[in-house]
Length: 218
Image (cartoon, rainbow, N blue to C red; front, side, top):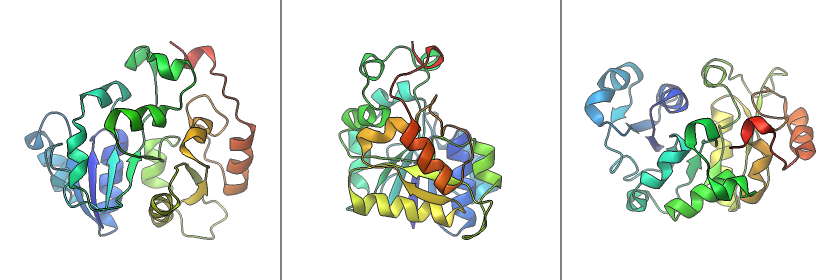
């Protein structure tokens, strides 16, 4: 697949490494321009791109930037992706970093907020795992130590594509329901950074509370 990644931080860089190693064609972008990505591109085999062009021709696009920066994205950049290509949102709301976002504080799921800002449907994934574990702890299907990752989204087809990619990376993909239920995998919930197996993850998602603790509120 051709995969565009917007954001070259911990998760973006990790996905670039893993996906390029699996044989995918990866275009990687950040806010500072391709010249700042030359070393990472050479290391990973990804292609450095501008944010405006990273999604061009992509079969799947990952957005992995600080949540507060979503408002700076031009929605037009997503129109160059292939028809039906999922947009994967890996982002989390951290009030200490992002400032207060009233709609999220009032209960709107983070990914629904993202969707409204970019004007395109998104699938929530890769937001509840430490980047180093994403890099190092993928295991073959059937391994009893395999970690499960939740994937939430509204369209079954695009969600299935993301779940297949999760599996390819060495993790069990668990359908976490529609995007409005993606709060169940946000920071402060029982599945956040817990490295659970599939059944444990399903129980954790079911037991989550929409009430945010003080640490996760502005």
